[in-house]
Amino acid sequence: MLTLLRGNRDFRRLFTAQVVSYCGDWFATVAMIGLVLDLTGSALAASLVFVAQSLPAFLMTPFAGPVADRFDRKKVMVVVSAMQVGAALLFLLARSPGTVWLAFAAQMLITALGAFFGPASQAAVPNLVDPEDLVPATTLISATWGAMLAIGSALGAIFATVFGRDAAFMADAASFVLAGLIITSIRRPTSAAVTHVRSRMRPFADTREALAYARRDHSMLYLLLSKGGFGLASGTVGMLAILATDSFGAGDGGTGLLLAARGIGVVAGPVLAGRLARTTDVPGILRVCALSCISYGITYALVGQAPALIVAFALVLIAHLGGGAQWTLSTIGLQLTTPDDMRGRIMAADFALATLSMAISYSLAGVLESVIGVSGVLALFGAFGVLWGLFYLRLTRSLRTELAARPSPNSPARAD
Image 1: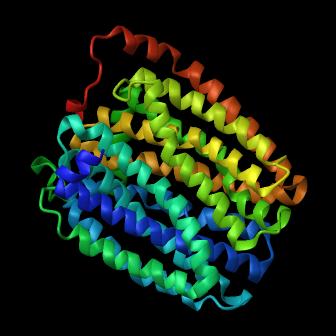
Image 2 (image 1 turned 180 degrees about the vertical axis):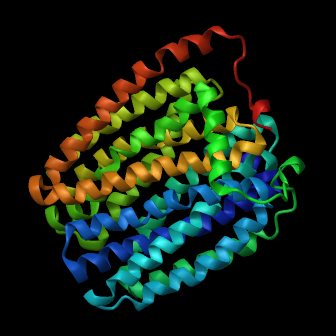
């Protein structure tokens, strides 16, 4: 991976831009969760922070995917970054319980705009790297989110504590400025020439076309379902701030620590999974996605019983080894199986299914917390994760058998 970063200037700049942007995002997330808890004192409101980070992406999918396939992906990313600057500055206006909605509005705008950035970035990767570098490049891009979750959450907690939450929000805005400037320096085309279609965009028809294509290709269909089902178990993440603040009395610092554990797991998970299954082998990817969800569910059920913050940290990290493996490997599978002219829409659909299921899960977890408590929510959603993993193993069994019997069913060249 280091060789790829050193040798490929344009991919290195895309990677660097994402590092900067993600770091700013997690600065803002830690500060926003603390702000919402201070202004509302509500566990449900804290869970809704994560809903604001996910649901708008689902709503933008019919537009984001076609945009990534029909327009220059580099320009899309630059324009989105510029617009996110203004959205991030809205955080500064949330000063009281009556204006806390402005913080949610800021987060929802950033997420909605990010729905255009994500598919454009992911769809651009196969155009910026050679076919043999696609798997390490995709793994590196996916790991970036987790690494910045770990680093950004930890630094964000320190930064917000030392300099205040307003400074953290301003750092988020500055990160979008810097990311946009870095992306403008990418020289290699981010789209194949054939994808530069200038006919009238039909958001819903274009999305239906891509989904119809996926229904005919069971490998693509089951890879799309992977994140969607996994997302329904992710309400556990919405409980981390409540666990840190109420159960352990650790405030913003504790929240940042548990989010950092999540990030470390997301980074290390794909590396560990890559040693257990060939990352260019779709049957292996499908199997690891199922086992990862089972591992995630079991471990999160134990988080609610943790006697100390450091124990919760270790368990969250282990849980997200599975979460990170599932997320990254399902993305690699889609990169391998999707043609360029469909890739933006398929990546957007993948993100949409994930974010919709996550938004539902976060909301339900926030409601249930007042009834069964944090440990009850973690046990319930952990059990669902185990059940989904077992179901997914059975669902994909015949496809895995069929694909394993074919000679060389997938190779990185298919994604170029």
